[in-house]
Image (cartoon, rainbow, N blue to C red; front, side, top):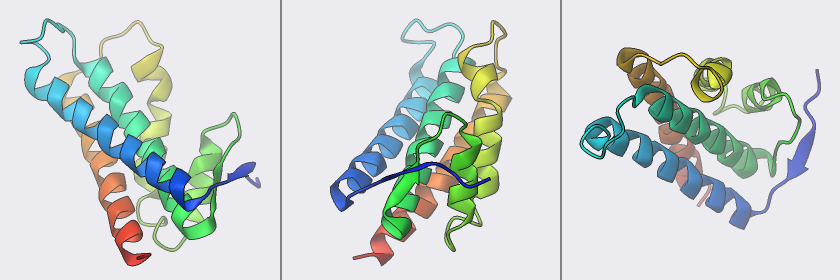
Length: 139
């Protein structure tokens, strides 16, 4: 399967990197303060934000390395494209894990357990850390 792609400029890559950080930071804030802020079931919110952080980080990695990102309806294409990059190979499994839980975290009526959402944050953090390393190496 050849992923459908969209070209990315350096500015767009930086914006996706900012998005990745913002989603990850929001997930961690909700993990720390969600119940105090009146969010009684935080798992799905945290998991959803982790998924968004991982997708944004993958976009930024691909933008930095390939000057393009996946643009198909199937998020699995983002995993394929990320895996086609040298720095992305190590973190593509983390993106796959996040993508595989997207429907469960964002559209399911079930409640995601705290331990499961914490694992998703770890996967997102791996992608954001890799993204930061790639962006630093490009300067």
